[in-house]
Image (tube, rainbow, N blue to C red; front, top):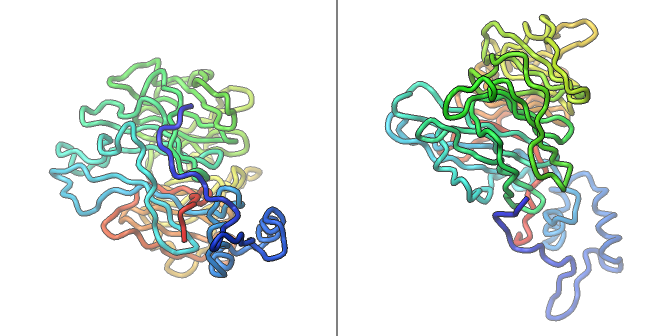
Length: 379
């Protein structure tokens, strides 16, 4: 892979003041200081002590804390006339503010279509996944209603850089995209026009393999019914789970076994409870948010049933219209149809819910949880 956007190299660990070196902790070698400070569970506490500790917390050498990443569109543009501006941003929990990501250079984000004047009530999907600690932009449409992305664009938060992945053999949109064990999968979809071969194909790219050069073809799907709209393929227990339509409609599901490269039918009970966006916590616990009534459920594999998670009073009303969800560290991050980002702490009883304020004038499309961005220039 070739790096296509670069940032200033990380600042040196040892700072100077009038020619005199300043240690991270006086009297200790810096590498020992870093080990000691990495044991502190609160990065906000470290960042508040002094400038040199704050620089350390944001340096590539220090263990990163988790941050929320989001794809936003401009909410102030006229949907009947203008395709809104698209941008990626990161919410820093230490400073409690949104910071922009450097824009990927190819293709420029303004070439990716979100709204079209001929389809006023329809938002075109822009498909991203997170895998191996990286954000991957995979699919979208251009103004000619053809695939806008010929190769994945991969953002590495540790170095704050975008890289170009190997080109798709068949660029596509309206596909199933997901990740499992650090591997990105793209299945089905359509190109500039429908092709049965593309609609039944599935490919993978292993982000943990630094020698990766091409997408690897896998056993094709049994039919092409997953090419009707953009679908999230959910990585769960070394399998990919997907259904053929979104929302509260009757669904058909399929399961791809990533170990044995084989397909199997989704149990009817699992597909029946898929009434909104679904995500797997650490690829183990499967959660759904009901798009119609806001109910949160967890899947019990032994009983083959979805069990309701009790949330705080009024929480289900807040979660109505859920469009996308990601799950990590005991929390669900949910994007709703009215443009809110909600965090659900499912480890609490009842589950607590709070809102992450959007940047002014921006509307979220999808959210992901990744390591914080390195910021060598922070002061």
